Image (cartoon, rainbow, N blue to C red; front, side, top):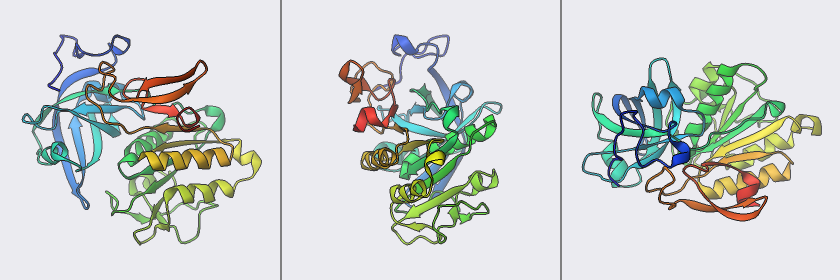
Length: 305
């Protein structure tokens, strides 16, 4: 679709009424755009309204190019509300994102966001297991950084999986994580530097990575905990649907709650078209929920049983 009409407040006129005042339409300026192997890119945009309201799990709807009418929904990886920027990791999967990859520092593009329901961590389960796969990694970085900034009880462990090289320079972890196989020492450099433990998984033979699916690594770590430790665990995940279903099964196996951020095709992304609905279990029975504004974060049991 074309860009939504612009109101003086900065909100999109087409935004679903329940979300007016929380989703902003603004011109974002490219301040950095990094290229990584596997057609992966990290885009940083100056978009102060979005940066000031974004929470882990929310996303933006970007106009990739003036000649590409349909926007693309992309997860937020990091924000800096003081400096007014947001950061996005994406992988080229079609002509829209290929056009986005050609945008340069100083270019301006339309940003609609932040959109969606964020993750809602339970302070009573502060031992947080964050599991990201592929382009599902960004919300996990955002959530981990948010937990670190909050201080308090949070003790996140971030597990990331990819079958292509990671979109960052991996490094051997400086943080010991009991329950993680000894050979898995690869870590996300930013998280490691912040004192947040992370580990990487891949079946592609990438150095320092756990040899297997990230869901298998999550299963091994959870299996190393006793009942008292598991009572403090909550799982958060984002990635392809098959991976999310596997994470949900692992969480159910170990009796721990799990929140998942779903990936779905979207047209409007603000609740108007209902083109991104999924069946979700509710206290009143099955219901169709919109991934864009009712989600993208849901209880894994409601989605996968």
